[in-house]
Figure (cartoon, helix red, strand yellow):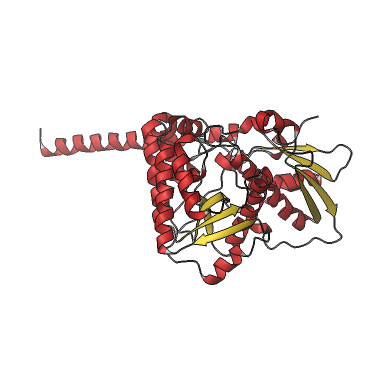
Length: 400
């Protein structure tokens, strides 16, 4: 075979390979659903709530954007039929994460996060809001799931004001509540720390921010070891695996749970990864998922200028809810300061395998008998992250 023939053959082979690669790339994008309209993102649009005439639903549409455990969005709303200015918030017991949150503490924190976003929206929309926690009494802890169905977490009463009260934090509600990417090494300033710690006005609750190197090293170890423990508990990892949505079709169908955006992946690479995960689910299960989780946690911990905690004097359901309200205020104020946050909740979880680490961090940081409700990292993010899935607010409203 002469040189020209060899060159022609090689050119044909290379052209064929290129065609195959292009087809494979295009297939991954199609499998991911690159041309699918992301309906799960509609609630993040600022005019979304305006579709509804009822001000209670408008507030609920804002509460829907709040941080929540496992992105389960476990909220139910009952509109008072006799009073058009009252609604009740219930914890959705059909959305419990029993393995990772066996005592439903995170579930209660999530309820508080919703309430604070609703209150913030009320200020902006011209409605003063009064929040009464557990208006029909405390849960029956021996029959918790059933009790959640009958007893509301909160009664929310709206009072229309003559003039909208401009809330400086309102616009920050439409930013991602969690940023898991690397943070800049720059420490928080004294002014930033003071601004965040001063948000809390309740005597039985404290905010602590740690950026001393000894505390950072100690908390880093707790964070990483907590991830290692969780990654080794099959039933907990399986609970996360079953709510992972690998492509746009699944995200539009369910609109809750985990997806690749949670790790900051966006753009074309998001669709490539989604296509691969759809074709090869094993990439996000078993040892692969555990290893990825540990690696991701370590990257976060290694790029954290400060850690913070919310500590309550007791561990009552009311304290859990109020800590969630405080956490939402922290998120919004952190955004206003150019900062981001990420919960690092593993070491605070109450299943048996985590008991040693749970006891350890409480001994070191809440030795007076208090409960650490939230542990999170704080810092200036190195990049923006995509918005996560949200359900349609009408799916939260109790049907007649």
